[in-house]
Image 1 (cartoon, rainbow, N blue to C red):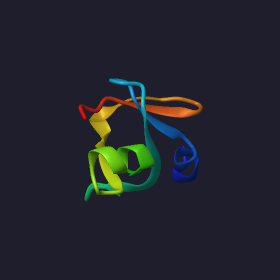
Image 2 (spheres, one colour; image 1 turned 90 degrees about the vertical axis):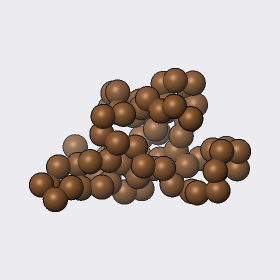
Image 3 (cartoon, rainbow, N blue to C red; image 1 turned 90 degrees about the horizontal axis):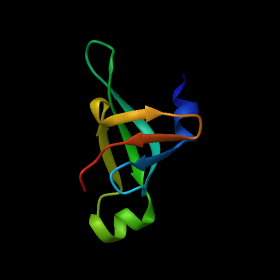
Image 4 (cartoon, helix red, strand yellow; image 1 turned 120 degrees about the horizontal axis):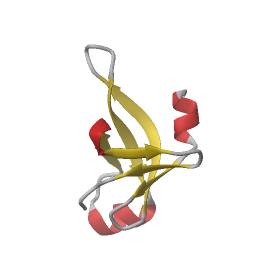
Length: 76
């Protein structure tokens, strides 16, 4: 799967069912493995939870990459 394909998927938190945002970048470690996704937060998350427009989602927080969405487990 390509990064461009991941960027078109919505990132959803399975803890509350809310959309977090969309992928804008990835973090690759020194060994060449993908460590995390960088997600641009939806306007709801930016205005109510943080002033930062980005959130880093570690690889082990990803529960499922589906056809249309990426399900993650975040405690917000």
